[in-house]
Length: 404
Image (cartoon, rainbow, N blue to C red; front, side, top):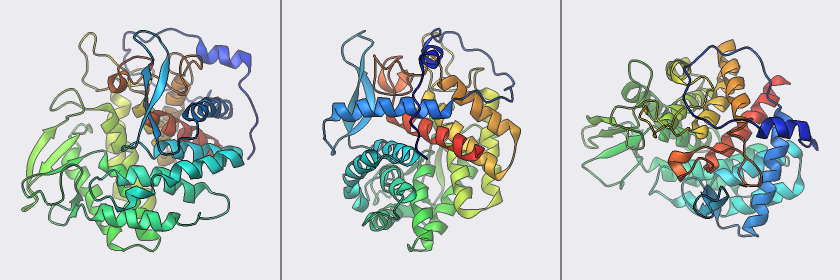
């Protein structure tokens, strides 16, 4: 479709005007309504992305990562760029917007920023080869209107092989952190579920069939060792790489405390289990997804944007995490395609409705991002991380697609 709508002044006033986030209200029932102006919001995101592209000035070898204040208390935020694990998200946003608008220029730019990630195809030093390659090349294959761009399939197949090098058959998982030859500790984090998409896709597109077997084992092990009785999740589990025994099942290094529940980790779990079902159609994967989703719905505040950790309650430690909200909104819309459930789709609508209004939607004069409030990651209430915008765009596009 070609969408040339712009956000009119009345909508802008609605999006930009409201109060700051203070006390965290309790969870409540989600009304069965959809007041999310998805098309207008995607037009707003594109304007923000256009400003970002202009600021990068043709530097296709660097990737927006998170926004930082230009000076202390300036309330102005600029993108800090890098080539780390998040580097696939910016070209992924470009591919999504180009597909949505049929914008040739955006598509060309998506290809230019994607090309810089090809170097990761032979990287066996990180599990995040999945994030880096599938966000860029994977979206390029899925969303290019003229078929698979030259060389893209080869990059993903080589990347899957590199990721498979981190698989340990004794543990039954791919290693997240550490060197492949570490014989003392085998560390796996919940985030790794998302990287498995590279293995699933490759196995279905000419790669080694064992890639899917590896990914399925990893998903099952994640459900076994990460999901707590109440549906919350650990972040890190450490195994003995020689025996496969669990050495530690009480780690949440990116969360608040050893046994707390890091909000983005919970979001990765919801999204990862749903994605795994998409490729395998194994019903138990949706059962896993339901368990972690039930926890999310029961624990999230009334406005559906969690604190950075579900156990963060101390005064002054109430930073919200819009990235996890956006990830879950996108995942729940897909989940509802497989198991129709009004609660899932209403929850997704409620999240997106909140993210589309102040204080979460960005004020264009202060930042080139689309959604703000990832303070724990980037140091200020008005800052954000690139994955927030990526999953926000994906969720909005799914909202439109699934409504057609």
